[in-house]
Image (tube, rainbow, N blue to C red; front, side):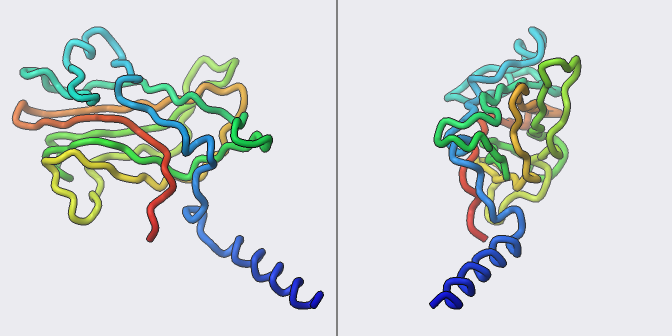
Length: 191
């Protein structure tokens, strides 16, 4: 009986270390966090004048083109509410968006996670940026609102840091109609 228990334990331990990091889900406090577009702020009054909020999403005003950067707070750090582990980890996030030219370069949404330390004068990137001009999920039509799960490199949130996303929305001409609706931290889809 003892040998069977040891074998089960060793098998479970081996399985834990053989799965790729993407198989690990965001921690519960991270999963419970959302960033609606309405929580974000354009970087300047000029950028603010180029966009408007429609049905909870940022879109460009009728005659505006160019790139607008948004700063979106991520109100989480290492400290946990769901348990006493004080260990919040991020494995990826889902972006809600519309890129009306698909992977071409006439419109684009990008997201990039950053943090500031309590004593830092500059922002530090957490992982690589995501772009809607990357290959979209199979079957995604570019003219519709959609979402994409970005399988980010694992990141352990720390205390004494302020986390935020820098999101850009760009269109080169008024024929394009990109939109940014928000970010959440659901469990990664299977597959």
